Length: 358
Image 1 (cartoon, helix red, strand yellow):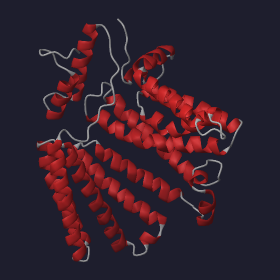
Image 2 (tube, rainbow, N blue to C red; image 1 turned 90 degrees about the vertical axis):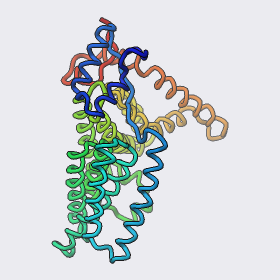
Image 3 (cartoon, one colour; image 1 turned 120 degrees about the vertical axis):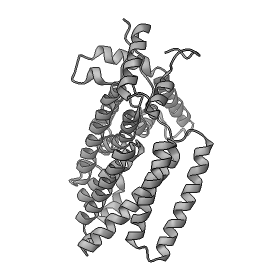
Image 4 (cartoon, one colour; image 1 turned 180 degrees about the vertical axis):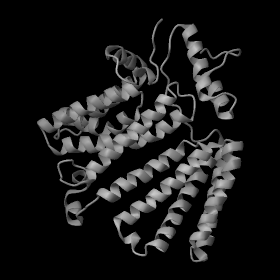
């Protein structure tokens, strides 16, 4: 859609959706009609925003100081769980103004973060009241996170703030870690985290992170397919889930292949990075590539770097930087070629549209 004085732009449609003037489905229909008349559909970036201007930063700073003071008062009063529950209710009430009426993004994120903290405290307090030794058990910690997630789901249903999905996802990740972690302190000190997330280690932890990653990816795709033109909160919610899914999946798989060492391990690592890149292009989400940058640098340095020549690192960084810059620059064209080359598969027509000449 041309950006002229007498035509609607994507930003206009997003503003209309945010204001409730049109629904996400109506906005997507308008955009599809306009692009069909222009003779193509154009892939779009991954829009998300943390704040709209310095006024939001100013309000959020003041709000953060206020919340810190309120927490301090609660601690001086022996940290009563009921007091922090009341603070959570206050955050809910404030969100009806800052989120629903003013639609201020950064203050809304500040409020839901404060609400999440109160939810953790309330869930902990409730569990301690019901199960005295619950907090000493991994099941108890998982129940605290589950209770927090349920309270955050209620927040999302009321305010539809995309960042809330990220916090819910963090609770899910915490539950996966809590229920599957069987860490040996001595082994951790000797081998570091790289062995902990190795699928060959025999630990349930990497299985837990892998399952969480697939669940977060599925959730992100579900949101994406509800808003393929990325005009509303569903696409923004998907963004935050992909931010969680990418490191959970990429690091678990890539670390496993990395730990296998030179030869088959590094070959499998290279193949996995290629497949991850293809997935990122198909679903049009760059977070998966971002999660794999460290492994890409390692593979290229393994191939090009000379231990006896420190200056060879300049070549490694040049090659990696050139590759990533080129990929970001020609992303749309690469995605177009890949999507055209792929056969039809379930959900292909519900993914973000790629350019198609009519």
